[in-house]
Length: 386
Image 1 (cartoon, rainbow, N blue to C red):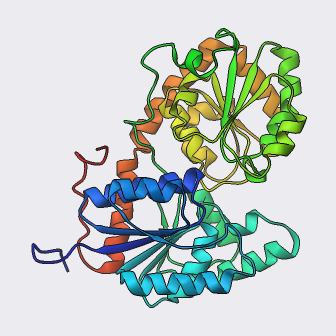
Image 2 (spheres, rainbow, N blue to C red; image 1 turned 180 degrees about the vertical axis):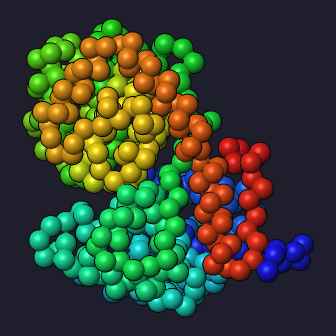
């Protein structure tokens, strides 16, 4: 069935917890595109900066009190979510990340078309008995997902190897080229770091300060980097549960910028952007950095190879959990500014051609169209960045 002039726009409910980092940016970008296309978009999430930003876009935001991880409050959280779903009356539910995917699928149980987007698998985030519990849930919960959307083929392959049986779609993450672009002039770094020598090689790591993102591994590597590039500086952009521990072990050459509303200036200021993650689905930070024309070093976790052009892999990919190899890659690139410039140009061309957020939103609309059995508008090309 196709959407006619008299049909109301599809009613979509996004569920998200967490409310920060890459997941929040994905939800924001999808909401912006879907609102511009004429969909009725509601987002259920805890009160946060994300909820304020979504309201500013024109989304209907419903408060959903939920912790980031499963725990004793889960039953109450599912009940609260069920009440939100009953009140909103969506035609389709799109649950983002493990916690919202858990609570959302328990609340809906297949009664409404449900899209689950893991944004990296829950069983990779924990070990021991908790990993077994998470894996068992993902296998059982798959029956209540009409479609599981992975951000990389590698993420889908991880799910398949784990025995998750579901209908799959792979839709790579995208970035907004109007927001992430090279700096117009050379003053960005001076504005951000007025007390740092502008000639000092600058490494930037953008991400939540937590075990997943691997900043502790980067600090292990940093001592070796400094032996080879003594004047180098490292900035950790973001906040999270590991901030105090990281700060306690960081040398003076490491600066903590905290959480920022817009990471683009930090990418633009960097000579090199590093993301030493232990696991991912497809990280947004390297895509954003490349869109800003900056070279990257990333660990070879799910989605990393797919986010890079093949020509960058020999210089930019390192094994996960290997501080020595990470240090070699970082120091080597800091010592070769011409190679860094070339890699930055190659990365930007690749991201603009394959990871534009408009392509991502169009493919998500295609999934919705398949599940709803009717047309889902996508005529937002001129208005997505407004």
